[in-house]
Length: 247
Image (cartoon, rainbow, N blue to C red; front, side):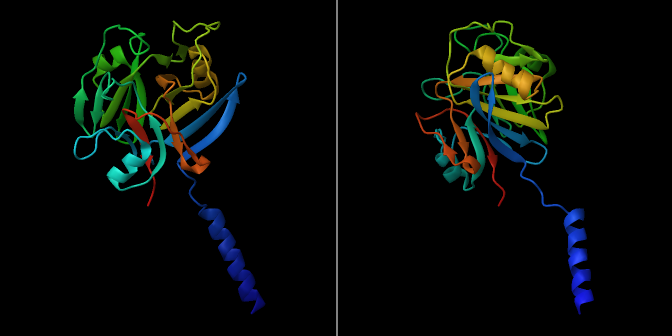
């Protein structure tokens, strides 16, 4: 009898080694860089359902993470504001959701952070999501299931935006997204204290190692990360990016 029990324990041990439990493909954690605090959420775009959310079935803008969950009837394992918007909360630049385009691509220079060229597009397609500089996006015309345009770019092909100054005094809470070259690794970040563009850009370039990264917004930046028991509140948002939690 004891030999049978030993055999069973050994077999279970082999199964545990051969078939490890699947780790979550969304990982959120707090990190520090250059004296500043950040919360980052890494997403495996090949495994997770990464989506953009703007309007409910009646055309009303969601504006909050709970409204998204209620509207789609599913929970989010992660959420963040995803691009600049007008006072009516409609997107400033290109916005595509589930193949439907609401706003076209803007390639011209303009006022504010959005128009601080180069800016870029966060493009979600099947099994990947990439940050693409706007003029490159216009030339290549990639197929995006969903897309949101914002600006400025934080990192372009491994280099910081040329207008970022190390001695800048403009500091805000900021959030953005970076992607690996193949688009399977996507990293979202939000600062937990006010930072400059230069400081925020170096986070993506030097720590997160994403060759391309895009600024989403400042001041109104918000994160929803249930695993960290974090749910930032504030004024209603425009576009929202999120990951559908597994059933």
